Image 1: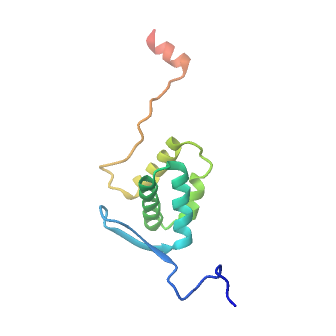
Image 2 (image 1 turned 180 degrees about the vertical axis):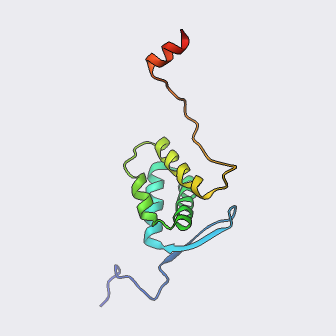
Image 3 (image 1 turned 90 degrees about the vertical axis):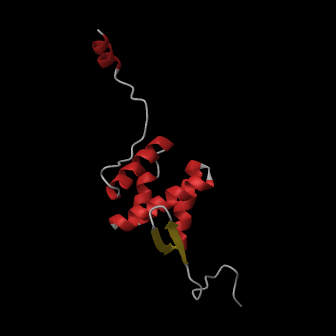
Amino acid sequence: MTTVNTTNYNIDQTVRVYDQFYNFSVNVPAAEYDIVYSFFLKEMTLPRTAGNFTVSLFRVAETTNIPVLTLLQGFQGQGNGINLNVSLAYYLNLIRDRATLLGVGAAVIPNFYHAQAVLQ
């Protein structure tokens, strides 16, 4: 007798990840997609944002030939969203046109002593 928890290998175990804007499409293992999507959903809390970050990470992995789970390990443990955005912007800049680089807008807080010397 079979159980409900067994995997049916006759069924396709992949997910098609696509982005219409960049004309990107790739088939990935369903388990990897679930891992990446659930991580971004936990960090971003909005399903649409998590989906966009997931597609972007698979696009970076496909273009740079770095396994997606290796890239994801670099994001884990960063804690807050701003670092996650900076890291993903770095990887996306590797595969984008150099005329349009991405960045993260964050207020730069200078060292107190350097700021005091500039004001004087």
